[in-house]
Image 1 (cartoon, rainbow, N blue to C red):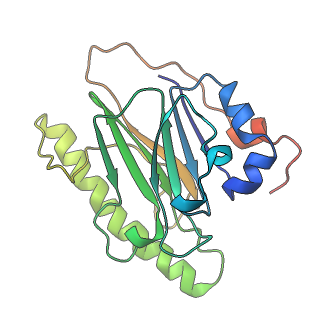
Image 2 (image 1 turned 30 degrees about the vertical axis):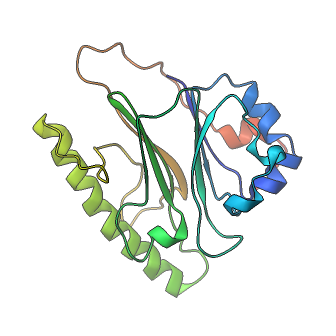
Length: 199
């Protein structure tokens, strides 16, 4: 399965720069987008972009802020938005989709770069989210599903508290032993999509 993940820093601006044309050429099975900065009512035909894909979104209550999306060629069997955090679920930072024994998550972490108050918010997020990942890991290693309709299984995420953490990421849970290994190789989708853009 080919998964592409990209922080678009505003879906309207990215669409004007050719985001969906570029994504269509990537032949991805799943596309995870972060920092959509839009609401559901903003997603007209131009911003739906990947017409052959199923779409799942988690929007922030605050307009023009955060928001994540997950597009897939086949319809997911389960979708979850948020991870039961009263503070952060309203910010539209987490959407998960399950495809058989594979779970894919589009996740947008707080950056903490806007000042001390946002850095504290980031650490609160990491504390809550790491507890969430521990529950997922326990579920995965137990070999038995403890999922309710609103729960999720385990995955991998880059970054730990005290280290620089990626603000946009996708999380996947690997298939069980004996399954074919995934295709190797990771690359920067932002550099591929917008080679002249400086961050």
